[in-house]
Image 1: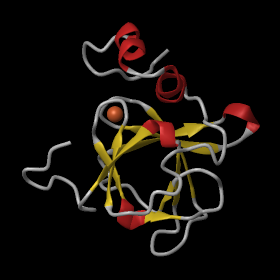
Image 2: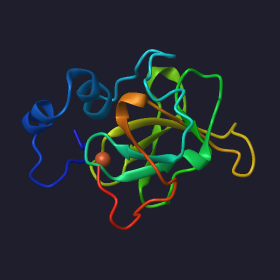
Image 3: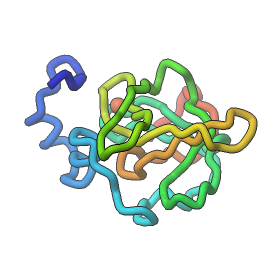
Length: 144
Ligand code: FE
């Protein structure tokens, strides 16, 4: 297996740190049931962090209602925050997205999103934690 891990972060530590549901999605590439996500209907200003490592991944500015049942974004906050990987599992050709910092599975990105990017980042709510407040990252003095 060639899964990325944070240095020193063993599988046992991930199991300790994450709830079983988050562990399954982030570390085992699971998929939460459609319409089940707590963050699906969150539309207030804020940023979405990786639930594994806290890296800032998405902004409420880019969130849209895709009708898919999963939180959806037109783009990641930065090209470096989210990595893409070809995924041919389940007999489909898709592009998996992971947190670049910890390798946690986020979901998939599809080329059928709205303007301006045409991209649809389809993300498991369980992969994310929401920090309400400003919709741009790294506001000085912000605490959670
Ligand atoms: Fe992460």
